[in-house]
Structure formats: C-alpha cells, structure tokens
Length: 349
Image 1 (cartoon, helix red, strand yellow):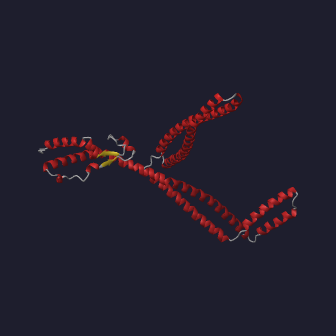
Image 2: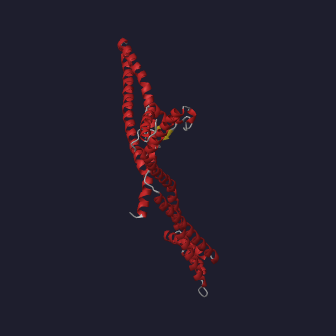
Image 3: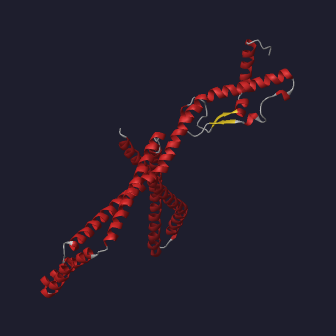
C-alpha cells in the first residue's frame, strides 16, 4: 500500500474513532435519562398498588349510587399502573441494549485507536509540513498579486462592472415599461467614456486590472482550500502521536515482559542467598537487602502485551509481589533450591 493510501486509511480510522466517541457520549446521556425515568417509575409503583387496593376496598363497600365514580378512579389507577410497568419493562430492555452497544463501541474505538508506528508518525508530520508550506506559498503569491493590483491604481474595471449591472436592470425596466431608452443611453455613454482609448493604454490598463482581480479571486479560493487541508491534517496530529507512543510502549513492554520471569527468579534467588548469608554470619547486619524489601512490587502495566505473558496476575496491575511470594512460600522454595545449587558447587550450606 502506498504511503498516501495508508495515510488516507489511517485518518479515516481516526474519523471513525471520533464519530464513535460522539455516539458513545449520546448513548450515555440516553442511559442516564432512562435510568432516571426508571427510578421515578419504580418509586411510584408501590403507591399506585396501594391506591388500587384502597379503591377496591372502597368499591366493595360503596353504595350503588357512588360505585361508578369509584370504579372510574380504579380504572384510571390501573391504567397508570400498566403504563408504569410498561415504562419499566421497555426501559430495562433499552438499558440492556445500550450496555451491549457501548461495549461494542468501546471495542471498536480501541481497534481504531491502534496501529500508528513512529515511521507512520513521521509520514504524517511530513504531510502536515507540506500542507503548511503550500499555505505559505499561496499566501506569498497572493501578496504579490495584491501588490500588482495596488500598483495599477485604476478602478475603471470595477466601475464598468457596476455600470453593466445597472444596464441589465435598466433593460429589464424597459421591457416592463418602467424606464425609457434615454436611461439606457445615459449608461452606455458612461461606459463609452471609460472605454475611450488613446493609444490603447486605457484598454490595456483595464485588462490588467481584470486579470489581476481574477487571479486574486482564484488565489483566495485556493488559499482557503489549502488552509482547510492544513487545519484538518493538524487536527489528527495529537491522536496519531498518542497512538505512536502507545505502539512504542507496547514494543518496550514486550521486552519488559520477556525478561520479567528472569528478573523475578534472580530476585528470589538473591533473597534466598541473603537468608543463607545471615544464617552463616549469625548476624542480620550481614544482609544486603534493602529495607522493607518484602513490600516491593513489579508492576505489570496496563498494556496489550501483558495479556499474553505466562506470568500470573499480569493483567491485575501487579506482575510480582514480594509479600505475596513470602506468604505463598515461593521464597522458602527458592531458598531450598538455592541451597541445593550452592552445595553442588561446593558451598557447605
């Protein structure tokens, strides 16, 4: 895939991520609204139940003349109860659907938020620099054209255009019977006066004005497009930088986890040797361990690569806990293994 094609696809993924973030925010607002509606409905249900029971008791004791009145109130309360129940059922179903949608959107955003390497970051920053340079180039040319226009010092082109517009209006008025040919002749005379030429200088000046105006109009349009393009690319830079940093963290994390088991084994062996040394010396001051060493932890880091390590608890945030190793008998086991190894080397321990 070409770099430009990759760049387009990458920016499209960022656009998707941002769109998903907006949809997620809208869903969470809806979730909050429905939760509040459910809370109100559920708090009202017991009172409606009590009201229905009270009305049923009243109807049982009511006289024939009053029974219809109480019956209508009962039917109204029963309808209200049915409405509240429907609100609860529909609301809970919608909340469940929102929860599912949010889980999927979160997963999709995570996918869209991955993938940028340092090389891809460089390619993007190069595109941003090129877009900025194009803006500056067009601005310089535009300034040059504005200088040319100012140096001409002749506004007859604009005057003629204004008169031509008036002429169109007068022609329409003549057709409608609201003006005479005399009005048209007056405008034509003014235009003729502006177009009078001795040696062709006036016409050349007008033509130069027209060309400078048209060039400047085109440059303004191109400059607006170039600025929009530069601004759009710049908007993506922080997102791309964050993704590239995340990719770099994953790369370093792979190295970290690859050597973690070796570091943990070495740590436990050093603790075991320290125990043996203190036994041999008969003095705790012989220890080379740092104070409160048993409180030390090795962090797991919340990285994707942590999920693939064989070390237990890697996704909990703590890859290794010295206290847990002591409590779990890992240090004792390491000491026994270390004594056997040292004895094999000739150490009388």
